[in-house]
Length: 254
Image (cartoon, rainbow, N blue to C red):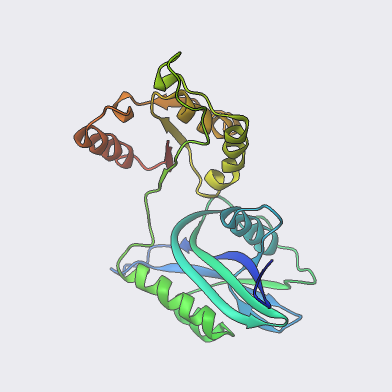
């Protein structure tokens, strides 16, 4: 929660959760969307929730979706920010297209959400209670019509705060400072939200150290790509990126 002038703005995040529907012989892509029903308001909406202190919007979206629906998802295309008035101020909610990843945990009705329902796009339009959710659905439907709802994920990550250059050691050996180490640790929930499975770094120590906490958290190794050094060319970088996007697993490139 933050205050702009006298207005209180509550930051939140959520997603339009989708899964591929079984083949039906149709040419256009068919998906189901996951909606929630809240007994307190007797409304149907997309899952979302407020950020915890110090929590990134991406991590908030993943946590709230799991808490409200039991679904584990992977964030994809950003769907933008919806802002609307609430009691005491304004709520600003950032949404992503979020694909179901793996099995959905059994849902247990609770005081906040008493029902979740997988529905088609047309049924979602008739169920949704609020205009801002209908607008969000329209944005997602535009992706669906262009087959852009399915994405390849490449996270480009700048290294954390590094030690200053000195004449005693080469630029490649500059390590992260203590602040940079904290920044590297804080990035792990964000990379996890995108389902990153491959970790690629330039030869610079500060870059490898930036992605090391996440690589350790998923028990994988860091791939060092010499084509990403400071004295590289645009052609080398392009070939590196094209090679990464040729494979499906989401990847971070530092």
